[in-house]
Image (cartoon, rainbow, N blue to C red; front, side):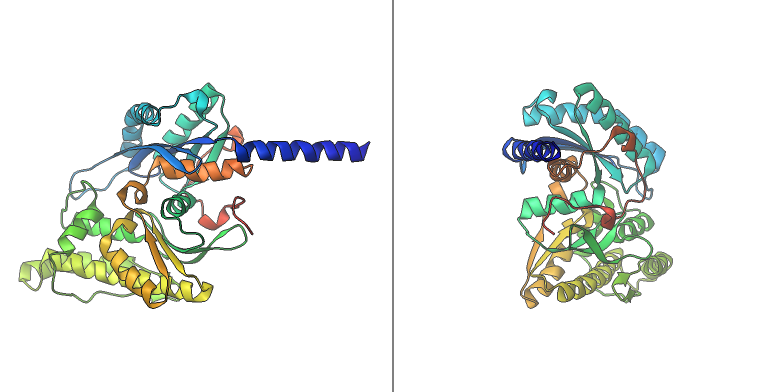
Length: 359
């Protein structure tokens, strides 16, 4: 009868659900949306391994998609082997293969998607396509223990203020042109600052030696920020101001950080006030910056909120964050058919159905 079949379906679903909730679930994640290539393995909230390599270009140069993709192809198999060895597991132990669908650079993304699809078929495991931004958020929540924070996501390709509501990470504000990390990286090229370990890190170290504040364009439009005009101004003025003795390269790095971070703190504070949040979480590569954390800590403490941040292991793009977000997605029924396991350079944070969190 129809009632019997309905009852059978219900019992089947419940059994499957209980199995997923009680069994130890192991997810492997492949990340390669920009110049970092990583493989991470997560088991029920425990990071078993998180191996990574970075494509470094000469001072004054950025990284091109084709060259970055070539780097990832040459490194990924060695990284995968290290990740499996460090986690002390074999492919048969893995429950799902997760990879970054986007956003990011098309060529590197494609390399990692092909690798993920290949191993998923070889190992006969389901695939999970993950949003890169959501990966950062879920990794931050896991490592820090933040429950429902207002999130500042800052990296080389993204700048967003995010808050969770009704199974969606909603964007309250964002850059209207370039990301804050891209602004810092491009200024590093002007000064011919080395790209190892990263241009943003090297700007941070120079900024600690700066003492003179040089006024720069400060552009906040409602909840959104803009960095392109500021970058154009400082690119044009840098050599002139340094050669004339008006200021040093260290002063300009100091001034740039103070200006862009003040803009980010302002829009984050506005989002906190709107949401009534008591937690602030900074994620993304720029989130490693100690000065940004200091400035955000002052604002958070004034509002009675707690600041959460992670270190370079988890702030910078890594495979474990993709594994963690994929782990959450997989356990909530979010497997991706192989026909849909392509990549996209534009994949908004608020396009993801966050089925694993309460509505």
